Image (cartoon, rainbow, N blue to C red; front, side, top):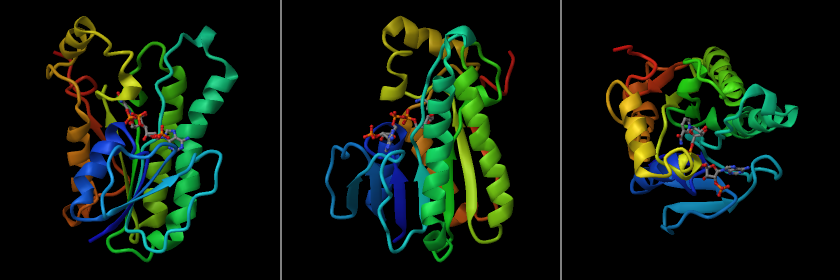
Length: 227
Ligand SMILES: NC(=O)c1ccc[n+]([C@@H]2O[C@H](COP(=O)([O-])OP(=O)(O)OC[C@H]3O[C@@H](n4cnc5c(N)ncnc54)[C@H](OP(=O)(O)O)[C@@H]3O)[C@@H](O)[C@H]2O)c1
């Protein structure tokens, strides 16, 4: 049984990860709102990762940081504060969490960290200037810490395409928008949070012990293929 800390397990991708890991592991969830379920293996801390101190947790094997943003505007409409806020929640929150739990993580079993990027860090997409900049920071963090923490702690990121969560609800708000989104992807689809949770499950497992410092596109072909 692993001790897994999830920042952002109350909804979205983090919630799918939490539900999947709960049956066989102890899960410590950190978010402002509680997850919808209670479970003997789940402990929730009501914490705003940017405002509050993070709770002390004695034993941590896996750290998963989910908070992020989708803030799509033309550059002329993006304020400097938009850039700062996106950098804060995507990068600084992750750095704060890693710094807090690294000492205990280093003593864990096959310790690893998962962060989230986006396809827009690799594929130039209009109106993504702020989020692409912040997620490029996440990818840099993964590369640098992968080297710094080898051979003790593994760190990887997943860069999903659009995933059906509350964060993307506005982009998938009706059937026509959903159909357009399916058509935009060469592999004709977009992600469900459970698909991302399955990838996390692999990356935090012993089976991925050779893998660190990597960013995995889960992209239904949108970055990888031009058909
Ligand atoms: N959904 C997509 O289409 C998509 C695409 C590409 C990349 N991503 C990336 O994938 C990751 C997960 O996305 P998602 O769609 O699952 O997001 P989501 O549905 O908005 O969930 C985010 C989670 O983070 C928590 N959170 C947010 N701000 C927080 C704060 N200040 N303190 C503590 N917890 C906080 C939220 O909980 P509370 O609100 O309860 O605090 C929630 O549990 C993000 O990094 C996102 O950028 C998502």
